[in-house]
Image (cartoon, rainbow over all chains, first blue to last red; front, top):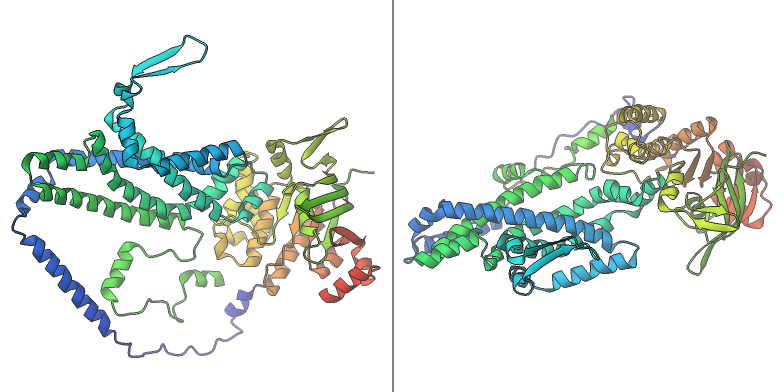
Length: 330
Length: 254
């Protein structure tokens, strides 16, 4: 088999003597140092101001940082975020597929859903579900034209937590469906054709071929949405759900240390979003398999490079071919 | 006479107001290799895509192995086939695309195993064995676990051929399989196709490779403007074209 690479690895083709790597004196970057000094000075000023603010009691922050109620609030926040995102993603995928359906009724239903849930504030939606008992005191579920039915008190079924989950989840689905739709559209139509030519049904093509490839486009904004949801879940306080924001507010209502408890909540929100950011990175790497030749460096690798090669250009030079290129030659 | 593998009777197809196929008549016998040549926009790729119902025809009859493509006839009436039936029939026809269209998120072997496993529900072990054998047949036994992006164009196209063969098709369609390849990679793909033809596969090949058409093709049609201008044995048509249009096209290709 004659491939182009054979000529390169052929020993009868002596490569020219490889010259020595260039040893040049690197360009100096004085402005990088100036910028670093300015930034550090500014950061120091900000930290100093807050550290020495006369009314700020850091001891209170420390006291409440691991307060059991706060920790319980964090659990509820995580629970709320996870369930609402799960609803958002699953319903979002369904809505996106519906939106792209050839059936005009199905596609319109999806459009209407997105129009409504994206068009009203999520706070209002949570409030709506929380108070639905005031207009529908009882819920009936029954089979029409029979006497088989089930009835329950709305306020017992739609608990504050469920109201928040419905409000956040249904709203998220509208946003997620647009993200998923963008992902689906981004996959080359040749992929669908090739799969169809192999006899795959539409459902199979979507599940096995299109969606896995769409994931690369879907995941970054979904990570964004998850981080956003973690913070938006604080709106559940309007439904008296005991999540982080609600708890810290309850405490500060009691002891008037408003800023201190806001700092406690912020520290925890930051910690949680940091963990999510980290997770997102590895998820992206997983779905990039097969798509790019070189996986991007992990955050740890990047951090190391930042520390030890501050003034070096990125390490891709003519004498450092990416590993996969070498693999192709064999 | 035996049932032809492909039978087209005044096949007609339009996209909006553009008439792409204007009455195509041809037949391909089992074990025959038909090459379709012609300028771009002549409708040859569209015709190929009609054969496995990736495009719907608007008029005429098109049948594969004695059964209408995409329709079923009962008495005088023609019924559209449900999705599932269309898929079942497509599974019996292999197709190779100009731009390979391998699934980039699967390795070479996974690409090949996907359809037998998911469409036919065959046993994992048997499919894997067959997949490895097919990769071996197209000369890529060492690329089993490699993702398509790490393969050259010629290697990708050979995997694509193996993927189509994994469904054990009774007919193979090739849509300009070497047009997207670097010139020096064309040979390896044509070699595989030549081997297939020798093994008796029925093939319809849209191509610009006149050498391949002459050497491997049993028959050749020249299409232009949605009609077949000229057809016959490849040697005759290529060496001694009867039509002015064919002559001017061939003079530009060689």
